[in-house]
Image (cartoon, rainbow, N blue to C red; front, side, top):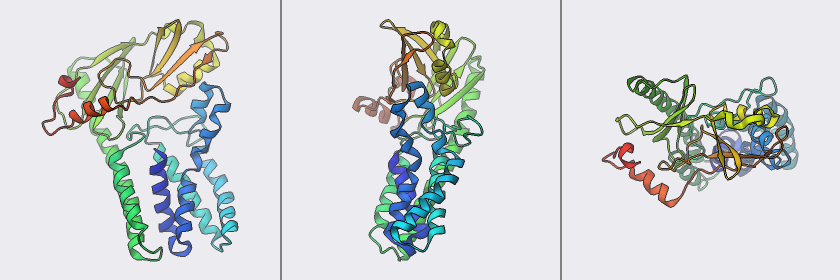
Amino acid sequence: MDSLTHIIIGAATGQVMLGKKEGNKALLWGAVAANIPDFDAAFTSLFNPASAVLMHRGFSHSILFALIISPLLGFLIAKILKSKNTWQWIGLTLVAILTHSAIDCLNTYGTGIFEPITNLRVAYDTMPIVDMLLLIPILITMALALFYSYKSKARNILSIAVLAFSFAYFGYSILIKEIVNKRVVSQLNQKNIPYNRFITASLPLTNFIWLTVAEDNDGFHYAYQSILEKDSPNYKYIEKNHELLGDYSNSKAIKQLQRFTKRYYVVEHKNGAVFLNDLRFAGLDLRNNDWFVFSFEITGDYADPNISRSHPNRKITKENLIAYWESLKTERKSLNELF
């Protein structure tokens, strides 16, 4: 999730767990602890891009990391504040860090919550990286809480409301994904589309519109569909072209990218270079074929290729925002007509 959502949930956790004893310091350190796992982003530039995408949300988001860092951070906070509540600070940091990692498991990127025992990256694909329907309510509620004294019941109730709404919303997102997945299975069967597996992921900002990517032996069928629209979408097709990797496919860097993408990727030659495009992420550009959020340019030596440092491009532009909201109007204009 985005940093602001983590900050708000961390601050609310701090208030509920330790706010009446430590005041605003509990909110501050709860917010700080809730963003500790994402400090790995400060070091990714030191690694080659293929390793960097796997390092982010890797060990720093694991249960083991939380168990190691929480006693150290909790003890340090207690020392800085000259607080006698050392064990409670340790408990707060542990809960805040583990909550961060658990929430990130709901995104598409993948979270190494069990590292180093296994390199499995957990991704439930139920939440976009930024969800305004979650962020705005908890931001307003937490802002209201700050108008009350740290000892007041009102601040505690509002902080509890932030946490309750957040986790209810996470549960709602899982339910919506299950509904979408069942709908996709029905659509693929009705259209006689062969597939080996498929993924669904919500677009940025809300989880009203979802991307579906269904793999067959040679390529991927993909479509966008709104949860407000019952009409079956028109599936488009994109070929894998994995053979275009040639001898690059034997390199360590490419194998890392294949693991990162969970092999939901296509390859294309463009401007004399090879591009590996990740299909798992949904951007806001629903009208163009070049909709990839992560696209890696590959050049140089086959054994040790140069991989571009691909920053996510979610295509959040004024034009795409207008088209997005047009699709959610009360008349529920079909995405098939719109795009």
